[in-house]
Picture 1 (cartoon, one colour):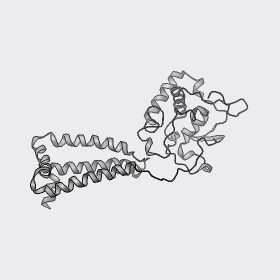
Picture 2 (picture 1 turned 90 degrees about the vertical axis):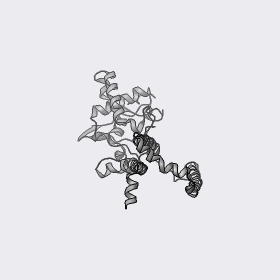
Picture 3 (picture 1 turned 180 degrees about the vertical axis):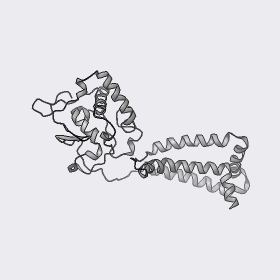
Picture 4 (picture 1 turned 135 degrees about the vertical axis):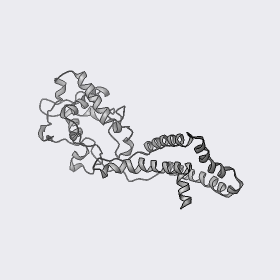
Length: 270
């Protein structure tokens, strides 16, 4: 018991404990704690975990080295393992196992895998004629973005940009290409708005429907769906969603698909 207490109080033991705690927090804590609190949770990509762990390691090294005596105690068992004759066997085992472990982990990263393909799905499912948005009926057929006829387009663009970078950037990315920090943690990955096969082919009412209803609002006949996008009508107003749509089109340079006078979707503006 006394040896365990000594290990816990030793700077090296404290550093190891902090590393383990940080890893559990960045992997299990961030991914599952929000779900226990009734909030939305999401898997944390390994690249983000690595970035956070490197930051934590730097902080831990600063902690153990800011005091000369603590730093000496921290290095003492490491020096003994690497230098003293009595630890020759343990040192040899460590120098043998460490390269084998690194080689095995590297092989696991690069080895070819035969994974089950993602289920077939329609990229652009047929939208409903009308939806319920925040308790009221909204007719989608023939619906144009009302902000394009109200106020200054530049102001709507700036509003949409702020909303996008506050809410959408972690998944859809700074460049709107679907390569956000959390994007690689989802299957399928978030939509790339810079792809000419996405919003350039759609009416703004279609984009409004998809943003407002998110993954939960995708049509049942197209199941199974794996979209992780939340229903943004729970967080944004109607005008805020329309402003984000303006930002998406203005930022990418695409023009939205227009409605024909007969009510069908026109092909112009691609």
